[in-house]
Image (cartoon, rainbow, N blue to C red; front, side, top):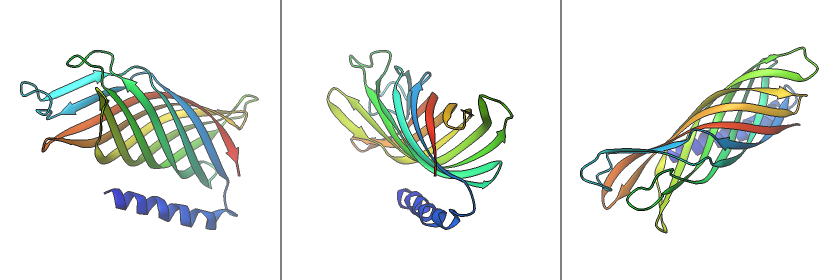
Length: 201
């Protein structure tokens, strides 16, 4: 799974420059704030034999990201990106501690876009993302990294003055965590408000 996703991203990176003369290209830098993030553990008899499912809301984490987009046509762009969610504590104690979770996501993206005739807004767009994710959980000074899983994201946004990005993104990062020979499914869901800047190439 991990090697396959990296191979796809590498292929895109090698092919895109060949289209440089045929379409618009841009790099986006984004800063995000998570407003409704949670982490869940399914099959977690590694934590307690009496329960098999846990879900905990997270404090509001900051994230940073970078994306590359190539315009296939006026209303459709494709690209790739990477996103890092900084560590965030759970809102409640879990067995006397407040575990922390952070994620690293890399993905391919598609962005249908509608131009707007406005002095302020340049366009409105939808965005879909699919790729891989690594989730890192920390508790009581101990760090565990989940096996890489699928990352999915979708949302909508707008571009202001052809350079400022504002968007709302809902995403899900998945993985599996092995502790003492027992495996649990781990999921990190996020609702993120992103602001950023579009650099035209």
